[in-house]
Length: 398
Ligand SMILES: Cc1ncc(COP(=O)(O)O)c(C=O)c1O
Image 1 (cartoon, rainbow, N blue to C red):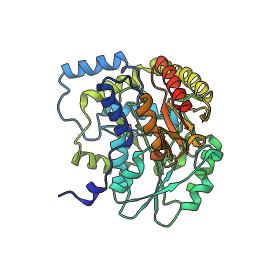
Image 2 (cartoon, protein in one colour):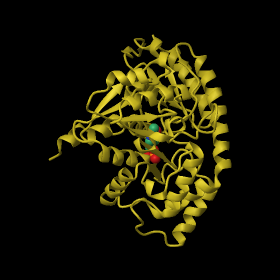
Image 3 (tube, protein in one colour):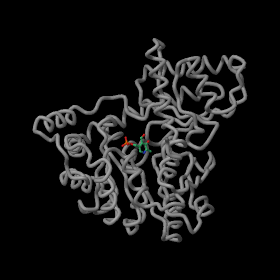
């Protein structure tokens, strides 16, 4: 009955791990989930109030498929502040979460057989999304030496006449690493040599940064003239702790934005109007709350990285943005837990969950084995307890 696509489709591994952790918790185990991709604090009060008022005011019917004009205008305004580039509201589209926006963008850019460059480590959903649109994911490997970032030279080696899209994500999920301006200059030179390539810049974490400016360095800071070749993707999920509200946006070339809006009109119809009004309040009235969130994350990051680096066999650098630690456990692979050899990061993460009820995401799911992704968007008390359990687990390995 099922299509070939359905048969090859895997569920999102991060959501699957989170579900397993919830199942263990429901059985009465004291689970600490460091696998989540969302802040642990509630959506800010002003946003929730705006959402409730919008419901009361009757914003409960279909709205424009490209989003409300008010939200698109506010998004253009905020993007100008962050990236320094002007957009008209017609160069903005709004939809139900960045995940769907990214998927809609790939649908509108990629023909069967077109290649999409994906630097690894990558967000778990990118390759699957590319396959779903009949494109070919081309993974660009990086390692510790290049700061887990793809430099222009690495991209150059993977280009073919079929290369259509480059998917960039900075700060990065899973590594928390951020491209520097110099690295971006290298990527811009690469893009100038290959004018057929469109960049999808997944900026979902670009205001959750702990170093330098309040926003992560961006291609459009370096090369605003590339505006028409860069699709900027951002949203309310991480910045305003609105993951369940499902609101995100894209800005770029008007014909691409129009195509994406048409696609949205034929698939999800529109993002919910009252959640758009709530997100508008986020953009217009929650800067102080966002900064407080960043401060809190910075404190947790410092505490967590230091504590983890004190566990023998665990090694991690300091993430510069987002809320993930990318821990190197290569030294521990090959050891045994209850007679079971832990060969891969998947084996390691499963054993850690089974033995100490700590849920983390294996790096193999992001295209680089030997590492784990641990979220520090959880309470300090849980971070301390998690480190205690990680130490117990590590000490118990043969
Ligand atoms: C890199 C990256 N892009 C996009 C998303 C999707 O965000 P949204 O909740 O807006 O769909 C996530 C969520 O985990 C992410 O980590």
